Image (cartoon, rainbow, N blue to C red; front, side, top):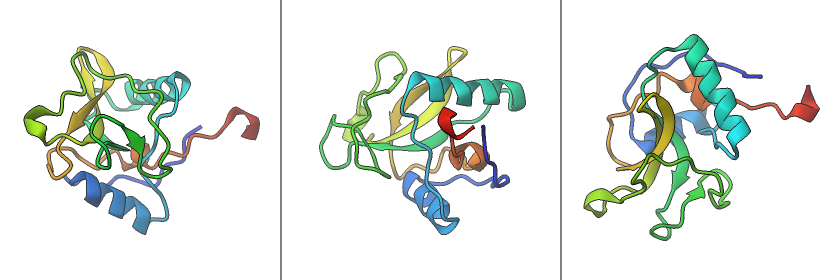
Length: 135
């Protein structure tokens, strides 16, 4: 179900994470529905306990509060936000990451220029979720 390309263990901004994936002919992974989120979280629970947060291509850079996937421009219709999120704290949180919060992986808005989150999950970031009809 997952295609991995190896690990890159660095802290990067949201833009840099996008750039790194593009240089490898890929993109940050959109999580379009509950099934995809469940597949990713099951993979993490099985293979990477306490995985660090990772960037996804969601953002509201063009219009505050209207989150879209950067790689497609489509609205984020599925977004399992952490309770109270998105909150645009200090009016500077416009990009989305997934993190382990209260024993569940959830989405959170975060500052696009912060380098707090790792790209060592590039094998998850660069996951290509194979559609069921491709199996």
